[in-house]
Amino acid sequence: MILDAADLHYAYPGGVEALAGLDLRVAKGSRLAILGPNGAGKTTLLLHLNGTLKPSQGSIALDGKPVAYDRKGLTDWRRRVGLVLQDPDDQLFAATVKADVSFGPLNLDLPTDEVRTRVEWALDALRISDLADRPTHMLSFGQKKRAAIAGAAAMAPEVLLLDEPAAGLDAHGEAHLLSVLKRLAESGTTLVFTTHDVDLAWGFADQVALFKGGKVLAQGETGTLLADADLLRRARLKRPWAAAIGQAARAAGKLAADAPLPKDRDQALALLQAMGG
Image (cartoon, rainbow, N blue to C red; front, side, top):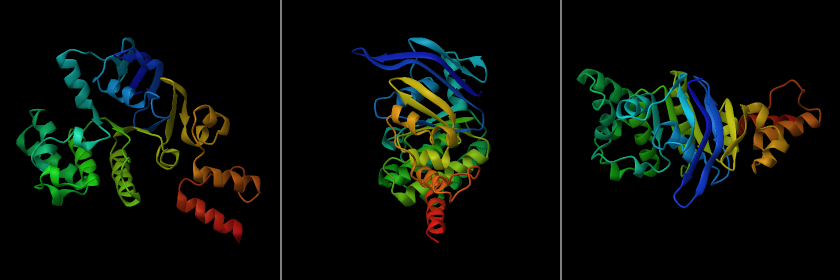
C-alpha cells in the first residue's frame, strides 16, 4: 500500500462531521475512484491524504510509515503526494502557464536543467506546450484544468490526488483528460480521484471505494463492486450504463457468463448492435 488511512475522524467548525471512522487503502500503481453523493466526505478525504487537513482521530501511513505533520514531514509528504483541486482557479496563481507549472519544481531546489526538463515534460504530457506563455486568466476552463494537473505532475509525485477531475468538461475535454491521466498512470503514477460519475469510474478505474456518511461502505475491484446492484443502491449510486447493457446481454444469453462486461460506451453499443443482429 502506498497510502493507508485508518479510522479517520474529522468535523468542520460547527460540528459538521465529514469523516466518521473512515478506512481506505491505496495500492501502489492503482487507479482508485472514490465514489459517493455530495457531502459523503470525498473531498475532505483527499485533503487528509496530502496533509492539508489533520484528523482529530485516526492515522495515515505513506509507504507503510506514519506521516508527520511538522514542516519537514509535510514538505516530504506533499512532494510524494500531489493534489489537484476541483476548481483550477483555486490552484493557478502565477502570471503565465509556464511560470505556474515551474513553481513546484523550483521550490524543490532542483538544478535548473532538471526544472526545465520537468516543466517541458509536463506541458507536453498535458498537451499545453503551445500555451506556455499565455496568462493563466486567459485560459478556457479545460485549459486551466490541464495547467493545474501539469503543475502537480511536474513535481513527479508518486501519488496524484484529483478532486472531480472531469467536472465542468465537455465530452471531448473529458476524453482528452482521461488520455492524459492514462499516460501518467502508465508512467507509474498512482491515481486517486473523486467522482460521482459511475460511468467514468467503470471505464477508467481498476479499484473503487464507495462512500456514504463519512465512511467507506465498500472498497474493491471496479468490475465487482459497480456490478453489484444492491451495493450501489445502498451507496445511492446508479449502475454504470455499459455494465447494465452487459448484464442485460448475459441475462438474454447474448453474452457468455465468463465474458467481460463492456467497459465503455463504444463497447456497449457494439454489443447492442450484435444483439440486434
